Length: 236
Image (cartoon, rainbow, N blue to C red; front, top):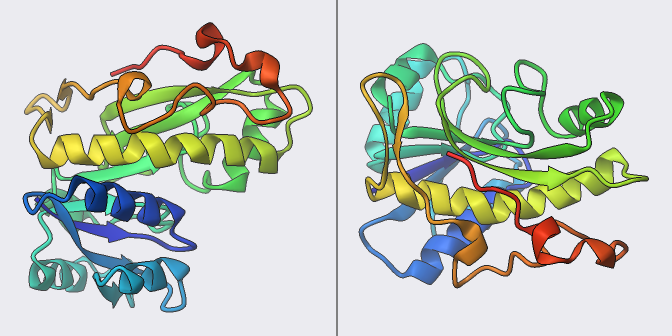
C-alpha cells in the first residue's frame, strides 16, 4: 500500500516508519506522504530529507480538504504518528480498516481526549501502575477507542519520572509500530466486518532485525535484562 502519515511534532515515530520501510526496500508498501497540522513540525523536515512529499493540514476539522490531499498523494493507508487532532468522521469512514494509531499506554487504560505524551506517563505514575506499554489500534470516531492490533507491556521502574518512562515506552513504539503498519499494509492484519482485528503480527521478540533483550530496560537497571523480564507476552 501507499502509506500516508500524520504527525504533530518531532516525528520520531515518523522516522522509525521511514527507516523500517527503507530497510524493507519494497515498492509494494512505502511511505508516499507526510502531513502535519503544524507547518514547522520536525516530522515534515524528516520526510523532506527522505525525499517524501509533505503537506500541511490547515484545518484539522475539515475532512473534505484532508481527503482531497490524501487522494492527490495516492494515500491508501493512513497512519497517525503523534498526531494530536481528532480525525474527522468522513476521513474515518473513508479509511475504515486502513487508519492506524499508536498510543503510549495499554489501552483502554490511560487513553481518551487529552491523554497524549507526558500527560499519559504522568497519569500512569500517579495511579501507581507497575506496568505501562504501547498499543497499536485501528482508529474510529473517538480518541483511542478503535480495535486493538497489538500491545506490548513496558515496566514502570522504581524512581521513574514521566521523562524516563516516556523514553522507555518510545523505544517500544519505534519497534512495534512499523511491524503493525507493515502487517496492515500487506493484509496480514485486517479489521473484520464485526469490528474485530483478524490476523497476526510476527512477535517483535523474535524479529531478526530487532534486539528486544534490552528494549524494555535502561542502563541503570541491568538486573531486569533476564529473558523472563524482557520478553512479556505479545498480545492481539
